Image 1 (cartoon, helix red, strand yellow):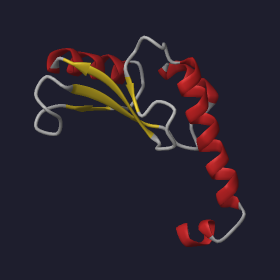
Image 2 (cartoon, rainbow, N blue to C red; image 1 turned 180 degrees about the vertical axis):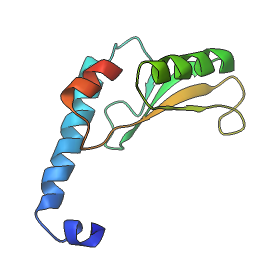
Image 3 (cartoon, rainbow, N blue to C red; image 1 turned 180 degrees about the horizontal axis):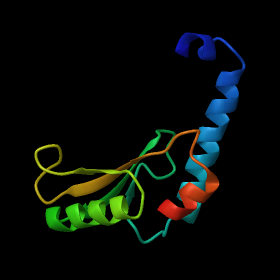
Length: 101
């Protein structure tokens, strides 16, 4: 299925939707929040938090709020350099991006 999509015109529609979702996220997320990969074409955004306990608490809050995100901390990151990772894709709705932000 993936190869068929990549060989069809559908790939451009999907790529455009991902780009639109990334632009929406980057535009409305609070500029004071340190976001890794902000304004980049990669579909992963990272919310730099630093403290491991704060990152775990933020991850739990997002989960309780219905948002799936992963907490990355040592040894995946350097100690005290924890972050929350979001994967933004083409099938996220505008409402979901706004809720995340």
